[in-house]
Length: 130
Image (cartoon, rainbow, N blue to C red):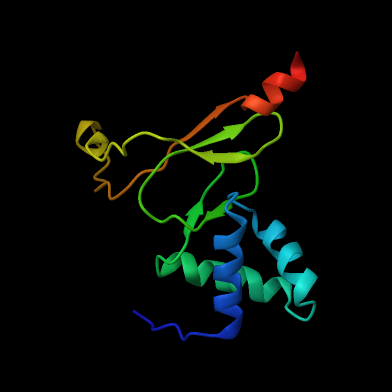
């Protein structure tokens, strides 16, 4: 495995993900970082997000119907996305790692992990609808 070096940009990006705590998109991270450091390019942010998630320092959350998100909390856990405001929240429930054993696979896969994203309407958006 190729060792990634510690850079100022990488630390800045990690700290921004950690401070935002709202499962930001790469674009949201770029905007936040460029407020304080306008010389950091989008390419640098995207490249370092990939590297940070690859080494397990942040969690890359794939969103099938919208921009992927990033999380500073890297333990296995689930997320829920509001269909209206598109915010993403952690789900407070145990991670069900035995699910892989329950899947009947006839294609030869060895399941290593899984991600589930629940969808619904958050408390704030429910209030606004009333």
